[in-house]
Length: 311
Image (cartoon, rainbow, N blue to C red; front, side, top):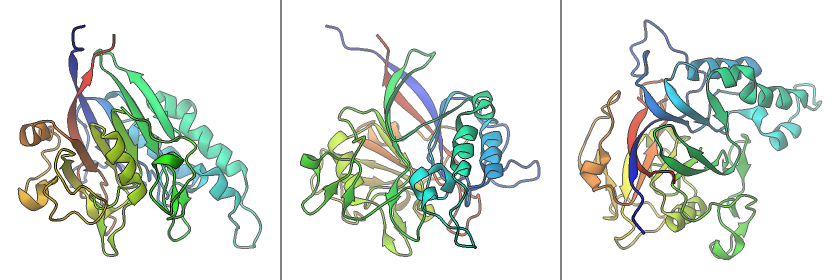
């Protein structure tokens, strides 16, 4: 049987837009018009603290991107989108928050305004898509991150949302309802895996259980945000030794472009990572456009992936 041919497919990846709006006078790197791509991936934190008007603002912002497919997930700041979290919240008078706020937020993300903007809002799990260029791909998504400071979409540090019970580390409890499947092409989560583009003032704050799942699945690309200070790109070569979820600043299996070979994001042009890393391993992308001081000074990433052609 002949091998399936591949289709070069262009992605625009961004995260942590936190109420960002386009401005004619802005000096920030994300400006109109945006480059035409096949797919937009938004890795969550559309808003700062939720709110229906903020979700609508985010939808109107994403409408400006020129792409056939726009895939969006929530993040820990998108409060009302997490039904369980929202049901446990109390207002200033101690009364429960209005459960209708969750319903309205979901309706906004899947309703006519979002549809007209070309948005496909994804829940946790694996999804498959076929594009007009003939490319097909599977993508696993999850808005969940390790618990801190009572934000939405949280799980405890001893809990694993990404692996089945027989795949978890010792002392870790699997709570996965939609575990990450083997042979998945792309992974989009809100937060980073441990030791990969997750450095903050508190150290490496990524999730070791997510790293274990990425190590198992070895997708073509894993994109995320959440840790603004971790913005950048890295390539993980799974064929090299000593891959583990500890801080990997001197691990030869991880090619750190900004530490080893300083390079600027060439946005609005593609970052040609395959020329540097021979297209091998997993491309990790922290696409938070906000800096540590919450200023939109980081550009999105344009990434070209070779995807299988649909049969």
